[in-house]
Amino acid sequence: MIIRYFVYAQQKDESIEIVEDTLKIIDGDIVLKEYLVIEPYWKIDGMYTVELGIKFNDKTKQIKSFLDNLSDYWITFGEPVDEILTSQKGQNCYIKDNRIEMINIFFELSSDSRYNDTGLQIGKL
Picture 1 (spheres, helix red, strand yellow):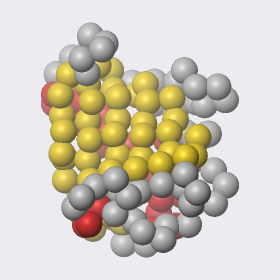
Picture 2: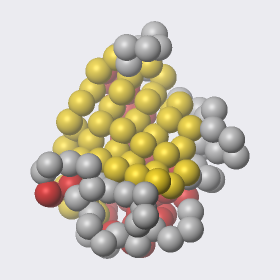
Picture 3: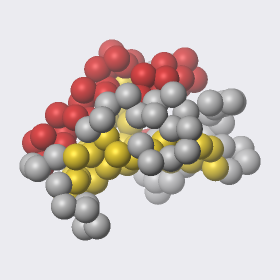
């Protein structure tokens, strides 16, 4: 899957630190992690876009734990679900880390098949 974070940070290293903090809960279950994009967000000063490809060893169990740790509500897209989003400004959304403005997760976006989670069962989030 591809995870795109929009984080409040002044520097590249700070943005990576924020993302790494969110991954600690499932760190032992990650079999592949690669940062793809780390750059200032062009629309908002003091914000970075951090995009990474990630794969878990037990997809359904670990993804649910990871998502619950990040936010209490996710908006789903697609049938079956191929993208989810949470945002501090979203209705009914609450991201638990106030350094993060928004998170998009794409389950089959990448042309690199290592990051695609075909057949992942998200269910109700």
